[in-house]
Length: 307
Image 1 (cartoon, rainbow, N blue to C red):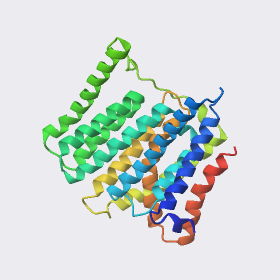
Image 2: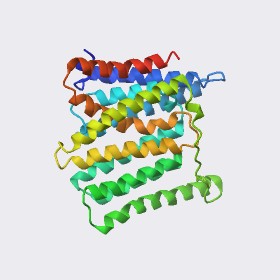
Image 3: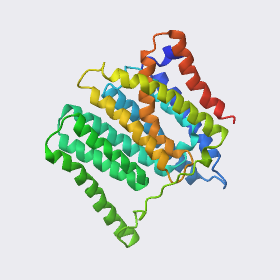
Image 4: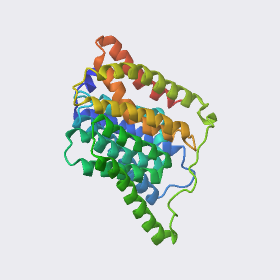
């Protein structure tokens, strides 16, 4: 029943995902509001929510554009459910922006498959990752994916390997210029020392324990099948699927290094994890097992809301 609703991309699916995302956003914000709400605050939050939902649509665009899943809506459903499971991911504005720019970069990295204007795609990918790192420093780790893509797509032109550094340099110059204008110094927009924390005590709550257990258990299980299935994909598409798996690895490292482990850092995992689990769901032959699998992923986030 549930799988039949989302096994095809329909307008109703986007409406459902919209309201799940809205519920996650409202839940997160309701825990943060301590002052009287005025009109400016409401308009600001509406803008942030729309930006958050655009990120969901961007995931759908990347997936459909590059055939990372079949023509269904599982990936955006899962993405919105992950937001609901850890609502803190919608509360940190900096991470919302950083994740959006990482998704823009991922789109450009995967599009290298066509080798049409690779110089522009490499520059754009590095540029967006550098911009993301201005909002959240450890987003810079996703820079690894660019070189992984160059290797996987067998790009031997040394010029192409140097272009990503030009993209980073461009952001560096722009950031310094903005800093001089608004802060009257060169490095006002940069953090002098990247922060790292290995304190995981904040995760020691029922909400986080259940949500993280769900993400890890379903994610690891789906990843085992995902890795095996890559060899069955068309040769031209295999690098893209490997890049998605690399993205989940990098995002896990990002979570591990996060200086303030409030849950918002998990946002980087949601897009690649949704794609990986969707690929697994598509391989399930047993109808009832598929229903139970998806129903569990739907039910758990709603249960967490009442904890």
